[in-house]
Image (cartoon, rainbow, N blue to C red; front, side, top):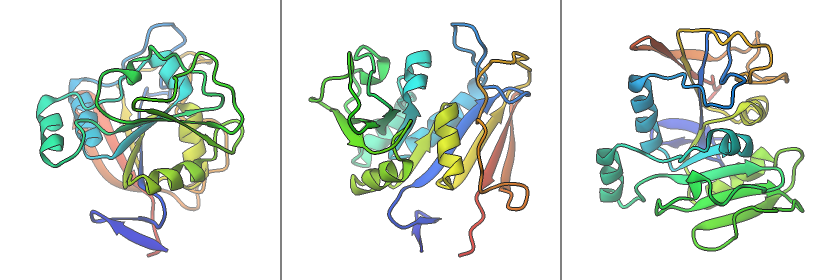
Length: 239
């Protein structure tokens, strides 16, 4: 069964899900160095900021938090102000998927933004050094292994009023959402260079994807943003 969310169709009981990722020409989302590899240019980063501003929550995996230390926030002041004028917090809810919940409470996403942060961890997982529940941070235990159950996360977010979710990685998170068939839209920003390292993290890992060769995604938009190309795909629906 499908319902309509702001002109978009999605399954009842879960948010509309957008997966967003920047990749190199050889499909890598980072290199093997300790420094974060920037794959997007200023124009594409501004586009992502606009997409963030239109969502109710932004989700990443714990590995992305540890490696990239993202703030997961709307950056442009005019977009933050527009959200506040609409009765929303200046930036969407922040969501982290973590097997055990062992996150550094000094991470930037636990910063000063006046917005709730949800950490979904595997039921029974310990959280040594993790964020202490309280304030605007909540730890939610759900079943699953090695990640928490994606469908259960989406159902819980829907109960909390999240209608539009932006998923920003990394590899295991994108793979889990896409293989579970729980993505409605995919944004791929393709950088104009190769990484060329065999062990560099890729956009997705091996898996059985519903959108395989016999059921491809539908290309909805191609946009040039300086030397970066945005490919926006939609998941076909029979309704």
